[in-house]
Amino acid sequence: MSKISRSTFTVVALAGVWVPFHSAFAGSGSTVELSEIARLYSMRMQMVSNKIVLKNRYNTLEIEENGRRAWINDVMFWLHEPCRRSGRTWAIRKADFQYGIDPVLRSYTHAPKRTPMVVVIDPGHGGKDSGAVGLKKVFEKQLVLDISYRMKNLLESHGFKVVMTRSGDQYPSLDDRVDLARKVKADLFLSIHADGAASSAAHGVETFITTAAGFDSSNHYGKGGDRSSVLNNRYDAANAMLGYAVQSNLLKMSGRSDRGVRRARFAVIKKAPCPAALVECGFLTNPEEERLLRTEAYRSRVAQGIVNGVRAYRTLVSRAKR
Image (cartoon, rainbow, N blue to C red; front, side, top):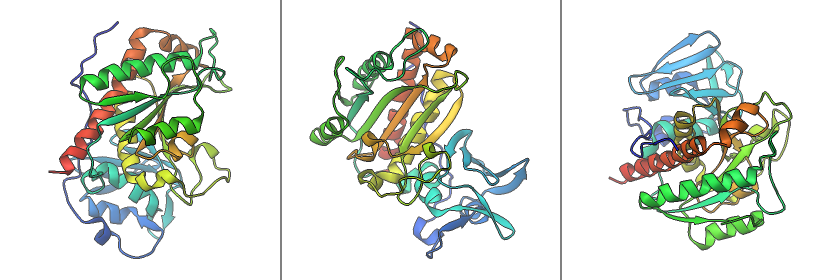
């Protein structure tokens, strides 16, 4: 098993200019112009190829024209709706700023008051539900249980209390998993998965957080769907902080390609009673990533990356309380 440093993790840099959010974009408009965001963060704005790039000494924000992809310090973060032309400039939906970009760049204005100590880890699937199955007949349910135990040991070594939704090859219902988080008064909920796709070419890692009310989820792929408000929407800003911290650190440790922080209404995150994320650790249907997932070294790196994200999130919350 490869040696992994426990002290290396990414804490999101702050923009360096404090402006109260509610005074920054007053009014009832549903969009925010990128020029306004640039002024708020004291960023320079320029067009580079098909992207609008906003940059200051601390952070870089890139948003593609007429697209939903954004990059915050080189980590992909999907918007609910495309960035569109607004007069002479470009604009995004206010919800994408308020519940996505701003919580990452100014986490101190959005951080929960309670420092996270109790983490519920949910190894996906189990029992009758094998989850994705690789070409070598590797079962998702087994791999994610192994990764979850590695996470548990690492988190406990850093002072967290960890509760797992399953300890073996059982299948707790989706509601049972969320009910457990509520029962133990979880501060964070992390559901661990490995991906599958019809095409063996699909690859990379991604982190899902709950979709904001009134918008389609990322996994609707442009088709209309459920736009309802859900219980977990009360943690929209904290979810963005957590999702970004996990994805950025998972990318660093796994070395896989970035599929981004995405939005979904998966049952275990939309009903979670605390900030929550669902992490996809690679594609079992991709031969190279299946090979990696079968190795202890890669599973250790994935576990370390997710744990580093949790630690980074805790650091951000602790700093905001000072």
